[in-house]
Image 1 (tube, rainbow over the protein chains, first blue to last red):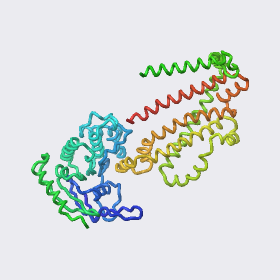
Image 2: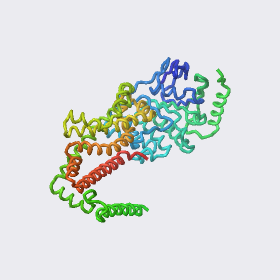
Image 3: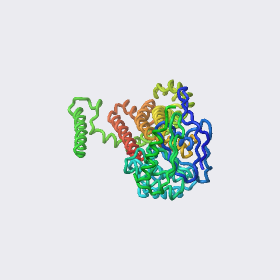
Length: 248
Length: 249
């Protein structure tokens, strides 16, 4: 379970204090697929960066489960794949394992298994520049899954991809979520995407950002793309967004 | 088209040698001032049989390799350190500005006073020139490393400076470092010859001896020897670089 209590994040730049998130309270039960939507600059990415340890909370706290030995409690997938270009695909996937005290053979075996999981088992010895954008993002997903995190943080992971790759990866992510039971925090600005993949959706809005709406997606997976349930949920979320007064 | 280019290049070289051969043959230039290419093989064979050629080349190569090695290791190490640490950069800023403009050869007096006219002095002179080139290449390459990739390392728990260096900074800056190393290959040859002209045994010293005896054919043999050795190293380096950076598109 992730427990976020009164979390505020303040950035200071050129002597100006800029509050990005204010008094955020959020409880995320184990195994939930939570989508976080909202306009740019509202602090969605900042929230993930705090949880990933890349940014410090100003006040308040974010409690994460402690990592089990040989594992990492959270892993982050960035918007751009950020593969290390000097490593072959399999060595990119094994990257996080190098800190966790596994033998080389075990690291490679695990990395190969993760590549198989994301459907790129045959491309293990390629260099990153030889892959398409969608393939690169799959490798990034495999790299995050390899450290066996309880929580997967994804920061607009599919937004830079073409529509076909994006839809393929959305369905694949849902399948992986169902088979591994991981908690996923999925940041996106695409409301329809959130409605298609998540089990719960929260909307951040305002400056500084706070939770302005919350919806449960009841429909079981696999969901129809633009089926009646997804369409209804998307419409409701859009309505939430446009009726909210952000002028504060 | 490739073979036509090679053919043209070969033809150009042929014309060059023919012209060179013609100059002394036709009596336009005194052969003592400019020996013809046809006089070179016998000069080389004589030098080879006496064993002096091989000995001189071995001496020069040992100066070259050791000087390069010392300069590259120190240049890369300090360049990376100063690139990664703001404290190190602040501390060294003015020292670098003071020492950098001093040409490597301006250190010759101290090289001789400290070490004498010997291998150590040659290595010292060569290493200084190499050091600055590689230092700035490494420093610039480290500063240009993509912050996003460093963040990836952080997100996977590699938070110590050492792991940041080995996992991200060094491999990411290697292309830039190698550019500096390649420049230093040529620079180091100049320093080898210069330090040997000051008397350290090697091809440069042998060339000066030949020149004082007006054995200009031997001088040319050693000039071509230097060109060949440099070409050999540069080709070998390019192949190694190509392999090291095979991950680049």
